Image (cartoon, rainbow, N blue to C red; front, side, top):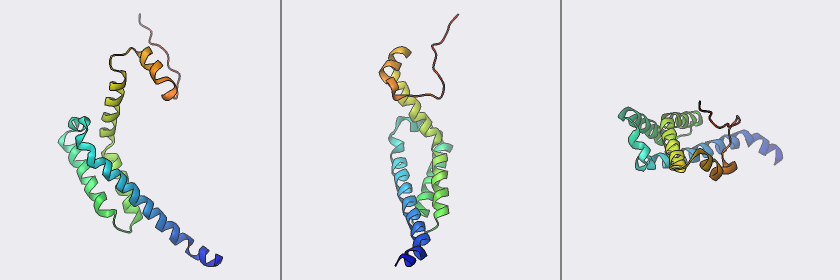
Length: 126
């Protein structure tokens, strides 16, 4: 029985990777489905929206297949196509969080939740 499990381990592992990739694709596709309801969507131009739609449609089509590499490439393509949209959403979230506050007040409210790879220093004006 142990030898039999070794014989099938690679095949089982590949099945698991395929299932996990399909689940990841489903999660990303669900998020992209809700994207047009976000105000940041309106900041994208028509070319960006059509690139996202093409990547979304491609991933939706190939995720049912058994080609793990194609599914992973489809996920990466949709991720790449939606990067600017994600940046716009993040900018809006940060702007909303600090709107009407001084930098010191915003920093105190955020506390240790935000970290940076370098020390933050107050701006010096002359």
